[in-house]
Image (cartoon, rainbow, N blue to C red; front, top):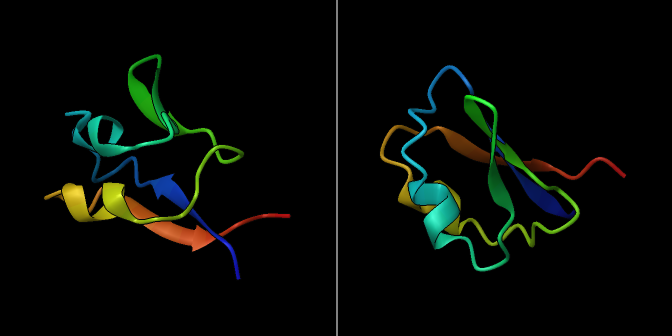
Length: 63
């Protein structure tokens, strides 16, 4: 099962720590929030581990 990062908008504080740790440049600013470019996400979970507010989680990739 392939995983992909997903931003939880209610928990995300837009600090961009997740974007800074992402080795694939998967997380980017989208207006006033952040978004995941799922095609680039390797599902490594580094962004999940980096977020102290649990604003990012891994979910099953939509094929």
